Length: 414
Ligand code: CA
Image (cartoon, rainbow, N blue to C red):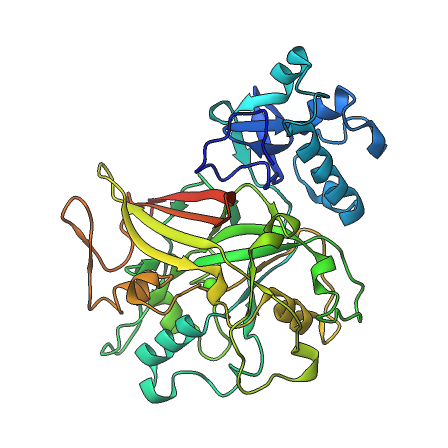
């Protein structure tokens, strides 16, 4: 399949992708898709009668979130994506032959600002990478007994904070908080000295449930609209002091950054892979059939102020021990209701090798192995003025489906 729009071989936004997002151009906000280096203005596509078969209300895409679009259900959103693919494929002349319409519908990405794609009612963060959980357990507890007894029996998670989820490009201010050095008698207050990223992916809920209802692993994919890259900012020194006994709090809720384009579950269909073998066998409500992991290359780079980018990690979403189906089934097994736009983050995605870890905590191994930047400086954690960039894409047999990037500049504390 090829598009009549020029799409570079290394573009994340091939005709196989067709993600959804919210953008602003000339002060106007609306929903869009993407192909090559262009945003597809869905509002224009609608107004110029290319989407008439969908019977959507007038001005439907003049929205500052995708929630109402997602709420139409996969029957509509999938069909719309298929229609866009058709309109942009070489074989179709419907739009290709209407040069005057094309000018209004295709907008160079450089001319738009991408906004938060959804209003996020709820955010949950899991802890589903066995490599990450093992690394953290090894560092802070017992190398021979790194995982807690529950870890292989359920996807461990906690409820995060949705109000501080921001889109790529939003600067993050170094948080202040309470910390205590291991040998100190009392805690002190000030800017975190151990600001860290966490390389994660999040799925976005596309269908709600009512309180008391559970979703079986057989049906979970009906409830998943798509995925974004997710940087779960963390303050390690605040975390280690505050987390006992109820878990993460202020070390985690000062900001999480997401990529602006939601890549649909359907666009990732070709990139399914087997899940890692789970031993011991999980309880029946967590059992799954078929390929439930996704082969998505992930990368993290750090750009120090006035310097060039240093890639610090190459990981992959396929390493996840617990998959999204198990996460959602577990989340709802007690009747907890889910809402459209909810984000469920994977937890830090670390691979098996030292250069595939998903956080500075692991990459620099608790500060014992600093990482060299291109300008000669070293990093144990993230400095003020650093920009952290995460990228992700899947590729197979000439098909590439990517997420673009999530990029955040770190500002000093006030
Ligand atoms: Ca996390």
